Image 1 (cartoon, rainbow over the protein chains, first blue to last red):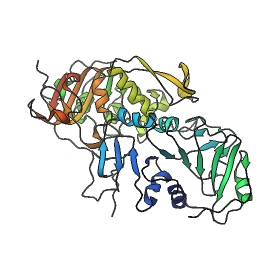
Image 2: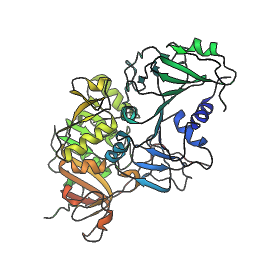
Image 3: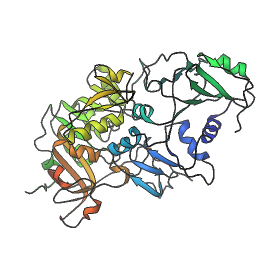
Image 4: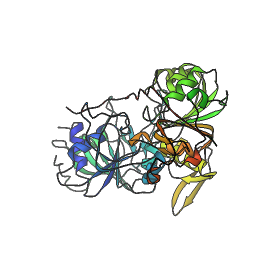
Length: 218
Length: 230
């Protein structure tokens, strides 16, 4: 069975380490916060100027002056810090953020990512995505393996305008965990009940398969 | 020198059609509501507005849009605004989009007297088009320019009569960098206090960057996406 959004988030949570500073994008990446292992200290950064995002507020706690980068009301954990946008991107650009998780329309086998613009459709802007992918030490993409029409989103080359080049390290989809290597995509794990053949069929780019590919534990 | 003005109408004096104006805020968080309202009531138009976002249809910068007072918008993300979409598609409005960190740093650099600098964001993408590219330590960077404005309009929680500012929580965002990058910077604050009463340790924006300050009123502080846990 392919993973649902929460399943993808759960698998990505296994990539976290104690002490990590992490930026989570909008959508599936945000769900990763729900699966941080107990006892592990992970600090979430929001590029609008908050280090230490807490849970969503109660209706009484909601504060117009305290939002995340998706403009949702949030809370701040004890020990959080607020800062301005230039300082926030100094953190990001300076390589102080350990991990960025974001969504994508397409990823290429060389690690290029397209995530912000579909020509002919409304252009909303890139926000902080280009800064994040250009600078974070580790970048994981969370997305569906194929689009709604069934076309692969893991391609030899991206067809849409790029967000960044040669930056994605790992992709977690509803079907698989895949690494970007100098030789192409490398299949690391299968979603429960998904065969190597299923993943091959859904992947347009070069897919390297070495030995037995284990099933994810989610 | 007296920096204190009575209200937003007095504060925006001198903003003329065709000028470049920076507006602090992220979404609707930390926006200068009073000055935006006063500008929307004025006849000023053809503005180049620099702001991370474009407000929503009936609030924030969206109000200037609706009144066709904007010629160019410089931003990083402009979703959540139907009128914006309409003016963009009809060609009434020119939009220049750039990565959020590049926008923030261009403003910081502009305020700090740095004409240009190199960043990795946008390398290999359409953001790179027409820009100088250089390699440093094996990594590729593109040159970006410092950004200043005729006027910067920012919003703070507290300010004193010398223009020292303290922001609240994530309502700082673009306000501090923009306060440094205006030829004239206007600060509207929720609470204006006599100088000497704010703790110098807590000042985010030193008063040297601020030319005009006033205590705003009737803050709505709208929430764009109220998200709660049960």
